[in-house]
Image: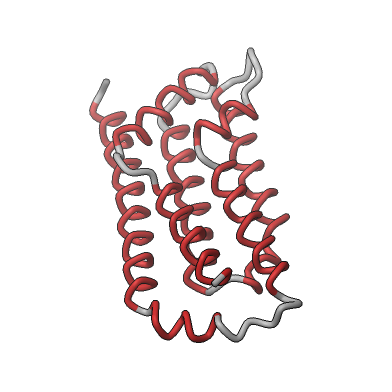
Length: 174
């Protein structure tokens, strides 16, 4: 691994750390505001409750679908180049985000920010890793490097985002 590849790997890991810290801080803020939020949730309109729960379900599914493991399994086709794989993964993340964008009206701003941050940082990591590879590189190499970077990051930003979504959904159901 040359110094340029090491630099890109460090940048990718740094991006993951930023996502982790952002989501962790959002989760801590949510815990600190739990009492006032719980009071607000107690007065939820029974007609809106099913829509809110559906929004949490859809966002939880979205978060799972944009994890590198899920993306790679869904998008990869034998013979793809790294560039084709990058384009396909980014397109998948963005199109699913656009499909779920209306769910933001049913969840807190903090939860929506966590989902949006996860989307942006996942795309950034994919693009950073892909940019260090020659265009003719097979997609398998891009996939391997993406999985390595996310594995080295420790606790997954997607897991933290899912915890935020699940925690808020449980408060709504009380």
